[in-house]
Length: 475
Image 1 (spheres, rainbow, N blue to C red):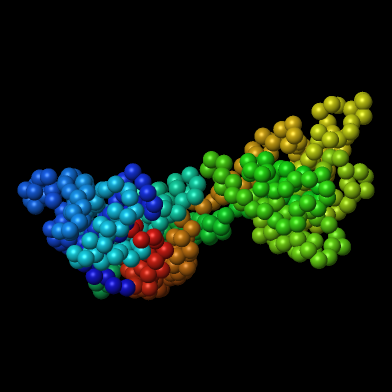
Image 2 (image 1 turned 30 degrees about the vertical axis):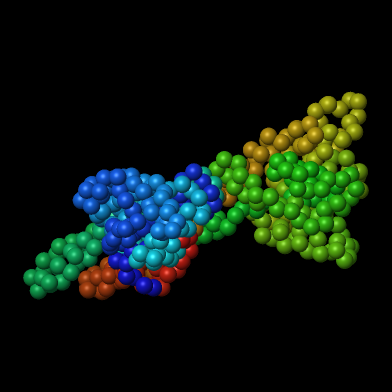
């Protein structure tokens, strides 16, 4: 990785495509020189002598002697370390014409700037101490957030919530190490700067905090994959009709004939803070061959990867079909970690004259204590309750992510395990009076080194490459 942060870099900082306004960002030493000769400010003296961040209106000359091309521009100029990257930085705000923005970028490259690599602006912010490594990853989390919950987690990490707690713990352990090492300097005088009881208490508190973070990181890594809800059941159980209604689309073919769905369909669903993939599978049959057998194999694969199975049992089935449905449901729920059972098409059930008009002729199938619900897509019966039930069940699946982004949790989990092990060894040593403070200090230094890796106090080119290569250019 080239860590020459003085050379000016330039990139498009606004989304690709046409827009009312486009932004070209240039950062590095000598950004004024990059603009010299083709940017004419309305206030030349204010531009040359600028000491603080401000906006400079003016014009860009993008033509030549035979083809003049003048474009109005607003230049946001940060002449000092108060910029995002911690170095002189300009943003050229122009009409959002892709052709115009390409011309401006080309001129910036021709006059000394080089194209920015993915994440290089944020990398420079990190190297300048404007962001720690957790906050740098949070920038990518904000960009990639797919729902309000993910955005909230990323913004909290960007604001330094988890960084602050880790930094505070690291400072406390540094002070503890200083007390231990000060005592080692006066071992002959038998001066104790910190008691063993206090050493143990502070180490145990630190380990408990790290264990909590490690659990959150493990949960976050598991929930970082998109949640999957699979609709399954016998052929013609109303799965595709329900799929279309929940997805608010008409992706799935609907027919009264059995076996209309041969493949599986996926639709991304977002309800407020909840986001998941809804999957419609082929009707469950036995003894299938050919394309039907392939559809069954796909369905089983989806069930094994799902977070929630929604099994559809049609209310208009006869006694034999009910028994077969119960048998296959028992088999299907063993393939999925969680299950909801629905009695669908309750509007088609034939009811005896003495029956409660709101009760289907076929009662809700036995679900062994699992959630069950009667619905009708035609009459809207039970759909609101189903949505609430899905929110409840999937909200539980998403809980426990804590303050970690998925990318941060994946990077930090192994390091947290090393910290936990180092603190455990230090606690074991501290609980033995015959063990000297120097052995406790060795394990404490090891834990502090690992804290430095998480926060970015200690880093390697390999770590930076893995993190910032995931960014898009211009960020």
